[in-house]
Length: 346
Ligand code: SAH
Image 1 (cartoon, rainbow, N blue to C red):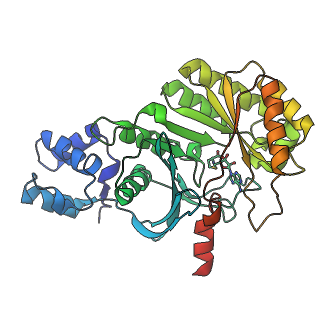
Image 2: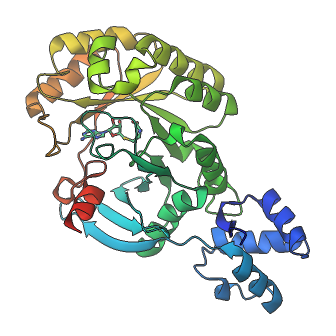
Image 3: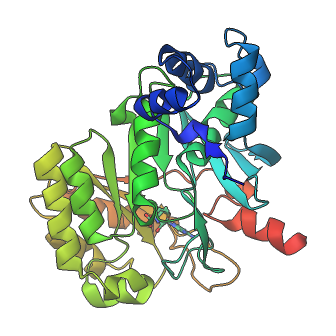
C-alpha cells in the first residue's frame, strides 16, 4: 500500500500538482489550502465547498495531521501554558504558550527528543527519536491558537529538538506559517534557535528570510563551551561567530545570543568581560536566562544579584542584554521536562 500523503505539509504548488494527480482542477488546491491553513479545519468533513467525490479521494489518499492534546498545565504565576501533544505514531511532544503585552507567542518543538547532548537540557537525555514534519510543527501553533481562542502573533522554534538538524522540514514549516493564505505570521515575528550547526546557519543566511536567528552561546570561550555543549567539538566558537556575522550580513537581522547562567560555571565577572569582548562591535542582543535546574544534573542558578551584575557588566561594555523573565517555572518550564516526566510516569 502506498503511504498516505501528508497533505498539510504541502505548499500551494505541490498541492496543485497533487490535485492534478487526483484528476481535479488546480483551483481546488487553494480552497483546500485555505481550509487547512486559514480556517484550520480538523476534519475533511468541514470542507463544505469541496465535492463529495473529492473528499472521498482525499480520505483515501491523505493523512490530515491533527495533534491530540494530551495535557495542558497553566501557570498561576503568569498564564504561561504548557501543552503536551500526541502525534499519530504515539510519540508525544511539548509546546509552550507565553503571553506578553505585545501578543501571544508559541514556542514549538522541532524534533521528538534531540541528539545534541547539551549538558543542562532535559530534551536530549534520551536522544533523538525523529524530526517533526512541517505539518506537526504547524499544528502546535494551530491547536494552541484554537485552544486559546486568540491570535498567535509570534512563533519561536526553541522547544525540544535542534531545528537546523531538521532543516528542510523547518524551511517548509516557515513558508507555510508565513504564507498569506494561511496564518500569515510575519517572518519578523519568527525566531529560530540553534546550538550552532555552522553550515546550516550559513545556508539559512542565504535563504535571506527576515526571521531572527538565536544562537545558543552559553559560554564565551571554546573550552568552556565544549564542556556544556558537545556540538562545540564539531564547530569551534570562532566558526560559529563567523557564521553569525554572515547571517547578519546576508539578512540585516540582528542576531540574538542565548546565555543560560549557571552558578559557578559561566557567571563570573571574568565571564562577563570575555563575553563582552567576544561580541564587541556586533549588532546583537544577549538574552540571559538563569538556568532552569533539571533533576538529572546538578546545575544551579546564580543568585539574583549575580545575574543583575552580569547584565550590568555587559551593558557597561555596550552590549545590549535582557534577563529573560522566567516563565512557567511552576509548570516544568524547562525544555523537555514535561515530556520526560510524562513518559516516566507511564
Ligand atoms: N536546539 C536549539 C533550540 C532548543 S533549546 C538550541 O540549542 O538553541 C532552546 C534554548 O533553551 C537553548 O538556548 C538551550 O540551550 C536552552 N536551554 C535548554 N535547557 C535549558 C535549561 N535547563 N535552562 C536554561 N536554558 C535551557
